[in-house]
Length: 69
Image (cartoon, rainbow, N blue to C red; front, side):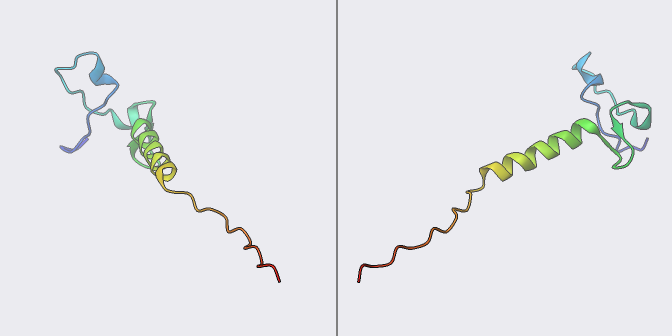
């Protein structure tokens, strides 16, 4: 791991005063395809879903009634 190794949120729970480093490929939660922790990936996807839900939904266009003749 490099100097920019992220902190593991799971391992850091056992002692909050010590930041445990990410184990990378040695961790079951690590996704090698994206080189990220699955917790980070799940959090990012949840954030995108929340943002999508907060967007105003487009109302379907209803046909306008014709004026009486």
